[in-house]
Amino acid sequence: MPDLHSPKVTSPSRFESLKSYLSPGELKAILTQSSANRGLERYRRAGITASSSFIAKAMNILISFLSVPLTIHYLGSERYGVWLTISSLLTWMTLTDFGLSGNALVNVLAESSGKDDFEAARQYASSAFWVLTSISVVSGLVAAISFHWISWRAVFNVSASVPSHELSVACAMTLAIFILGFPLSLEYSIYSAYQDGYLANIWSISSNSFSLLALVLVSRFHGGLPQLVFAISGTRTLVSIGNSVYLFRRYPWLIPYPSAVRLASIRRLFQLGGKYMVTQLAALGIYQSQPMIITQMLGPASVVIFVVSYKIITLPMDLVYMATQPFIAAFGEAKARGDWAWIRGAYKNANLAATGVGFALVALMALLAKPLIRIWASPAAVPTTPFIWWLSIYVMIGIALMPTNQLLSGVEKVTPLAVSTTLCAIGVISGGILLVHGHGLVGLAMAMAFSKLVTFWPIQLYEVRRIFAGITRAHS
Image (cartoon, rainbow, N blue to C red; front, side):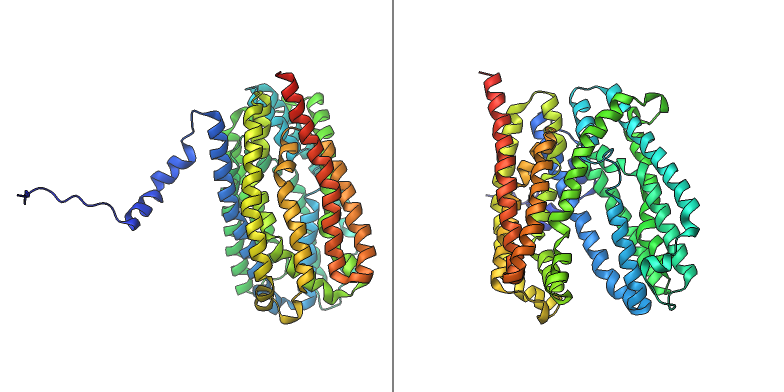
């Protein structure tokens, strides 16, 4: 006979279980409790960083999406065009760190972390910070001296409807943000090097949230170009300053004392960074040259078809990049510890995951591309089916080679990256010009796919096989 007075035990509902997993204590445990197994710890940190990257990316997309209806109606087409040009210039200016931040700093700090060499890490961080600060000071002086000699109206080719004072203030603010950005550009690289990229993404999410709030306020009160510059970029700079304070409290051994600057550290950063900078500049040819080719050969109307299609169909490649990018620092730290078995296994796993998930997403986006473009843009922006499939092939090639790219970056084999990227850029531009003439946008997509296949594939995969073959011989 059952005991009527015994307590009734029930299993928690799914909602209660999900609520417990999403509680602040549980989330803090996931972010802070490290694994004793170093290999599993690298996977854990890479997974957290990738997950937070998706959220940060979504915030960026949201801001880009909302900025158009919030601003274009009251700014007018000419002032809005000026704003788009300023935004584009700020993006291009991020390439002018002279290789002292970015993957070069990630490589040397990850190596120092793998060797538990705090002094070397301090020297690299201090050297990068003070050289970039010096560049910032010199740039500020040049900008201050030359600013009033530049005809900003001629630079942006605007009519009298755009007030000169408004344009000058907006340009001054843009230059100030650019100049301050030099020493602040170290933040993401430092977080990435110590496999704490999720912290950088949390700060990025906070920064984007403040920018979105500021954008809404500026548009609500019909602010001009200077207010827009501050809303989108100025707020991010202020948050970045707060991020720097937190950063050096978290990693006190990296506080940039001038006495820690070393010429040898600067030399190595420039050697590595120069190769990465070549890769970045060549990447502009691969990913940014198409609109200019299309404009000159097919007309501006075809640019809309290409750009809209590209944003949708290449989204899986962006997601795979965000998922695999955290492995750069993990590969570097594992290399410093001589843990090549983990590197080989992680590279294999990353390839399987990237191709398995990435290819499925590419196929899905190819099937949905036409209806999505018809809804998001307009029927006039819908591309042909052959163009969609050739662009999808290009994306699949990029996804298949993404882990290889991250591996070579992580173990500092930058020369094959620079060579293959440069050759690919030449192929995309020259092949695009030749094939667009007879095949239109389909020809351009064909040039992009073939160029990546015949440059990235043999050069980068040959280098990976050479690396692993050398390790096998060393241990035999």
